[in-house]
Length: 295
Image (cartoon, rainbow, N blue to C red; front, side, top):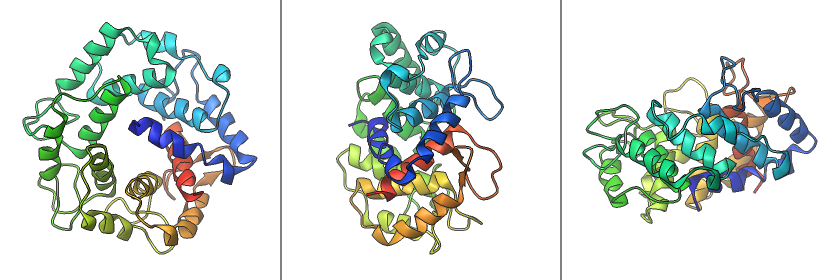
């Protein structure tokens, strides 16, 4: 099962905890849909990245397929991704997977995969910036997911393991970029999940490190020295821990309190306690976190 479908499967459990509030979330997500067909970013411009989360958020709420927004005409305007950066190339693949890959011509899929492959690094990984020799955790995860969304796997997929090894940190975790001495929660969560997809057991110390990033009052820190927890780190950490069947039962109640503290009655979730805006991305991560906490 692809990363996209794994997360969606769990996020679909969130309505069990949300109850009537699920309708508020649907209303908020639909309010972020542009008349042109894509979902709006934080500057109120339609964007592929936010469209990923808008579409998957509605699917997580089990919105009837016939009532989902038809974004195919808008996606068609991007063709095979010519002119897009790496992140938006991967988002184009994921949007098509959500909208229905049968609407995306095979030749365009192959061309899009080729554009993503151009970001392959000498160490076997991928980096979101062009011309790099060493990959990043973020780049590896996005590329792997994009190839899955296009119906395949990266060429020589085992080469990602070399890149992953180069991102290990002395504290037992992973950093997003090589040479950083301290691990990050999002990078470690990505690498733990990618290990499972490569059928490689993740190092136990990395799983232990992830668990330790959760504060006693709930919520995961992005970095050990971060001043406050955030919703993205919390959602992806829970997802990674669940993927390797780690026991995080003692974290559930405090994390539920943390996620609830980020809820906005207008139907969305804030990214952290200092974030005043609502968007599709963090709202989806709220659904993902709640899905794991409902189990």
